[in-house]
Length: 215
Image (tube, rainbow, N blue to C red; front, side, top):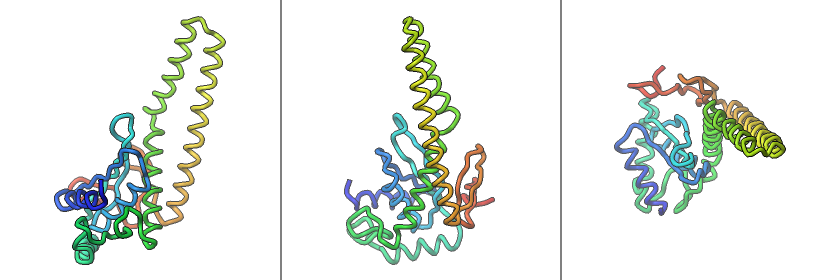
């Protein structure tokens, strides 16, 4: 899909919806972060990212319309400065004709990418995901035992368990590094209604019902 078509599709969501969803079927966090940054220029605020779809291959970044006067002023200024966005004109935060952030937007996009990465790692580390992984390990061991392959059951189970624990450890280290980077940038750690840890920018609150940024 061309850049103009992608931006045009985003602008249609922005014009008609209070929740914009930026998706990437190949889990390119950098590209999703860049497009999310574009949406924020139009008075939206990053909310969360989830893995969805078949085998959780699709990144879905959710952004909510911010009702604050500052956000509405930001939207008006963006529309005035980029009236031809999606139709061959300039796009806020993007280099002309590309999906690459401008030098001025690079740091903001990098922080959005960090928020995306943290949200996805937190989701994948959930109890259900881990429970399924351990179920697979147990299933392999039981299958090999039934086949009277005792040595293979012991070795295979130990190897898979080791890989699983190693992957969990690496993911946790990466998640902590992202958390540290976000906190150093001024983002605030909070827990949502499900107990999941999230990071909000200064002054932002978790989405509510009528007002997405109400307490």
